[in-house]
Length: 267
Image 1 (cartoon, rainbow, N blue to C red):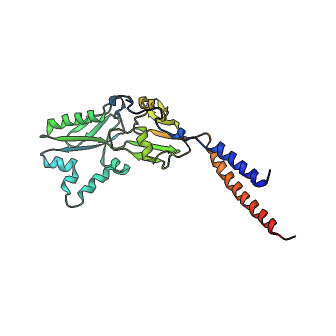
Image 2: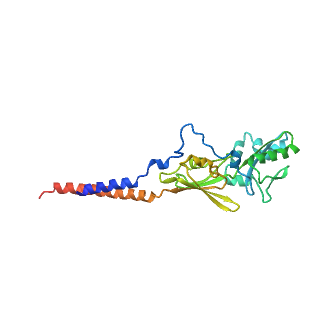
């Protein structure tokens, strides 16, 4: 067998053994058209407020002093007041300007005093603050939002990092989308979610190729969850095969050129 033929054969074998099937990267591949995919009820997936959570609290009423106290942007119209909302959209801004639940499970609100909010969902907390405001103020409108809903996405994703969520909930697929999706070397059959709890860090393994993932208690994420996308077991083989292919391709070109030169060389 000629040298060029041998090299071609080796390249062919490397390409066969290093290639992954595209089916390994298909999300929910067992789902069919018009399927009804059932997941956990929304009441199960809601975050329960706890000590250390930081809240945005807005109270608007007919009392101008209250509006200025809880909504400083209302008094800054025409002077870049819209930017005051931006101060809550950074970790440092949330820490400085938000209301933190203390070790007693309470928040200290101007004019309203200490209010126990730990152990409640965000919507329940809003109702509790609304009830307290109704006792003191005239026709108040209350909004309560969680500011420190952060998740960490790492491993085989295109943009690993810490991401903040400003919606009431976020699921695992949305979190991966925030990280620009998984790489071609990812295994989406064993995505790990690490969740802090009072007992320690609890781990969940989720198979994103199956529609049953919606029934996992970890599909809807909680604040401070870590998502780890593992590499496929063939990643090293694939990376090495690329280097080998490049080397063998270069060698093949060199052999071809040398052979051509030997043919042209006069005796």
